[in-house]
Image (cartoon, rainbow, N blue to C red; front, side, top):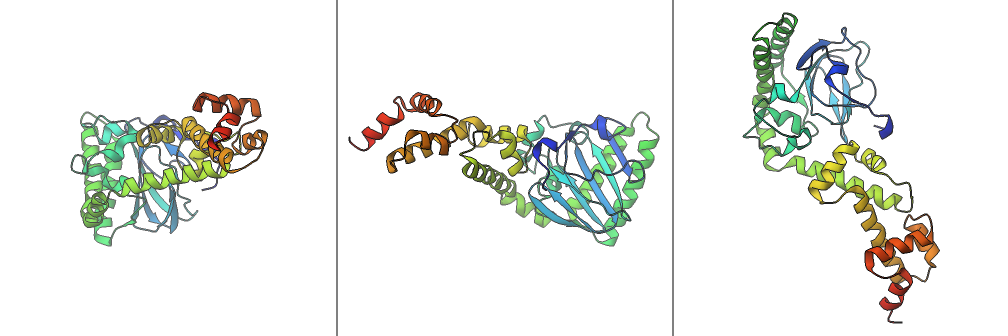
Length: 302
């Protein structure tokens, strides 16, 4: 996905759904989004016809007929449906799917499979293609029809009925892909995804360390994350903010430059991403307790 982070919207249920808890539609009800985006709710897309691909996070996977896509809240994605294709889309709030779970949506991948097995397809979508055989897909189609009928004639108890149909759909997929899902869970595949995302962030910092304008938004785009999610992930995985991480890397580079080169301070300040030598010296002294020139002399024993 090549759209810049500043152009990537995050949608709430009220923007893309007729109701705030559960919404099901086909392509005739509302045109599909054709550019990368995120939303605050869960989404399942079911491909009824028209082979395409899905971009989700940093992965690109085939999205053929009889395939389902499971999209977590705040996950960058887009599925470019062909004009002659057909699909059903289901949006639903976290509280609708998981009324028993109190959890920040950014921490959903930390919940044990045993506590919320219905999360399994969402957690491992970047690793699996959920293509169903004809019999299982026919069962899904029947569930979709029942969902649409229950959703169109809402009354007391309809929410519980819809949740039951939704859980049956997710449960069908979990049954079919049980071995793969349990293996991914045992191998902590979502942790690998986080490590890959953080590696992309660190690579972005290394490549842009000399740029004073290096920002959280830019690094998040490189990792296919939202700025809010990257902030949350960095706090969880490193205990640091993005600005603290960049500052630490710049100070590390500055120490290396001061010890191993004879470049003037103005040059070192520039390659470390500081706009002027005086500001660089203040930041270096605040971090190390002495100005960069004195640090160089002491490290070289002179």
